[in-house]
Image 1 (cartoon, rainbow, N blue to C red):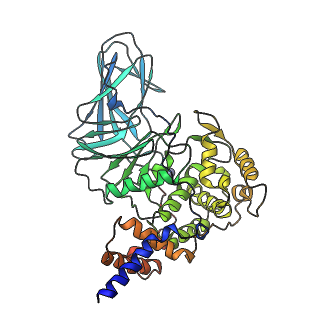
Image 2: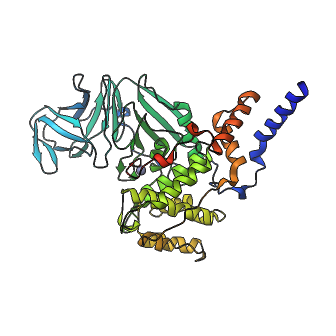
Length: 464
Ligand SMILES: [Zn+2]
């Protein structure tokens, strides 16, 4: 009996040490495994700017209406002019001391105690900001003009683009030069464990040598359904901002993994132009599935099936070059990129991560404008004009394309990833049970462990 136990233990230990000896060629691994070491600085959160300015904007929650908030402006020096523009996801319901203009509300330059009351509304992309009895999360309206404005709230967190009013808890983690935080109303039930979500982020940061890691990334967590989409990442003058919002309804163990999808957006510091607008969503969708697979959050079967479903997506005569945030951008976009990675994973300069790195670094600290032509030229140069896959046909025609599948050959690797994802120090009994469970999940004999992708109808929206 004892000998048997030792044998089982030795077998499991051998399995756990296997990742070091599994040949890399078995899988298209993302290349980098280093924490980011050259981070981009972003606007600090307003909560950290405490110096009073000529105009002081105070955010308050409305305790009788969970979907409204008010900004009170206290102007200490007259003569300054400023304008407030509601952003997507909010609308103005009342104001005092402001004149309505086609480009927002202009302060009347007289009223020292003015205010604007906002209501959360559905964004153009179908994301609904929400509030509850004790909290509200929303986007910060744009402020412009001649006045310096400081932002304050009695209780809550004012980021650079998003805010949470009410009592909150912050969960943070560092990797290299990046600090990643989750900011959630106190006593939020996350669904997924916040530590596990932060593990996912730090591991993703180490896999993504995009040259586009922000020094600080903040995810605002909404403990409610957020409508058609479970996440949203606002853009900034720097590409995509360093903040995003995710609903606790988002699933960490899914090809869609909105937790990860929104984080990946924060690595996009370029401005796609003519014919390439699909790449924001296409690359976020592809890398979400890819990194979820590599972290053991989904199985190769789930990954392959999602790509197959994306490749089968019918969009009539619409072609990839014409879309930005339509379903086709997410789906066909990710299929194109999976194919590029599958074909060129052995060549360090032409992987999807490298492509993003290249786009992120074409204009110094400013976001570069990248057209489809730039992309095509880069692709042809880094692949030495070799290979049978034509990104041009995949982008400008509606012809069928074959995804870059992971295939079921990677079973032992997948099982190790799943074990690593489940626990840092497994003891033999749970590890053995996990191995049995992962085997069943992989062979799809364990349906409740596998997301049923076939039930995921075509009308389902992708994460924003
Ligand atoms: Zn997105």
